[in-house]
Image (cartoon, rainbow, N blue to C red; front, side, top):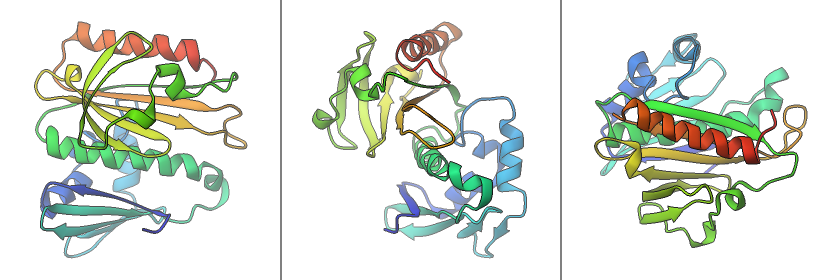
Length: 238
């Protein structure tokens, strides 16, 4: 696969995947996270100067990124080919690519696990002037984690015990389904390490996205408080 391509195999037909890319209410169930301005960001990315193919298998965004849908015997292969960033956007390109990696996995999760249930997300990020390694701070030995699709159980350095299945892994990201993050089924936890980035980030950083479904306010707030406390301790810098 080309280095400028990101792909996920989704257990759904191409028509369903296409709707997840074209209907704003559905996009809001996987793109980014809950925040002020999400609806406007969705309009800017998915409505402004986009080009749809007549067969609904190719979508070109204004910045040159292209989604391609390929029907497969076991679902749809969704590939994003990144456009070439220029000007001021070029320095942000590594972070943008990492972000799209998360979002495609969130799309796959939403469509396969919770196609009709609204998500509620908690997001926090930070950086470490002490050059903290995210996996070390969490007490995760990634070398001993099961392969994607296999069950896991972890007791983090925070004291929380998580269980579910490994959703995906890259060199910088870890996606885990979490049974306690949903009233029915499971939710999704994405943990991401961020490298130094000249002109943007002086120190190594970390991101946490917890996607939940159907939790009461107390349970959701407890998850957010736990991750806030962790980041304030280990990644307190902007």
